[in-house]
Length: 149
Image (cartoon, rainbow, N blue to C red; front, top):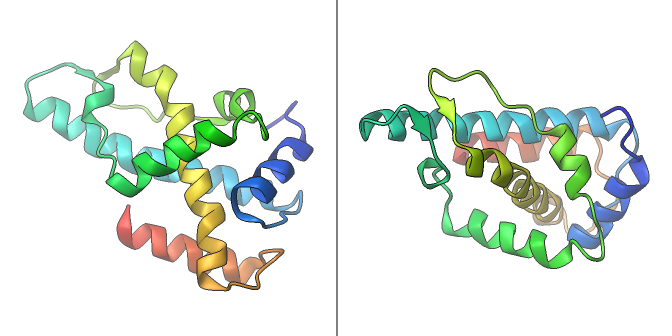
């Protein structure tokens, strides 16, 4: 995430979940978000193929009700923690067999924001007193998300 200020992400995690992250957590965070987007996009591609299309569209992405709510929450906190430009830079589109629709590409940073809000909340769910997540906390949260997404 060259060129992206750590302070923007630090502020975001405080606002979204009341947790403090270290600069060393950014690599883990980036891998996590892009991994979850990759998982969602693989399913989206299967949906597009099943519907006989050669372009993956926004409607193909399998968002749960909870993740949709986190995307809305992300939009609500953007004025206080404006990380959208950083997420636009961070989101890595995995290669798919099908093309990406334009609206999907524009929307994915918002999905990344929703996943980020869910991540911030998850730290508090696994340990209500977690203030600065450690490697153990990151591992637990990753495992939970891997079971669900």
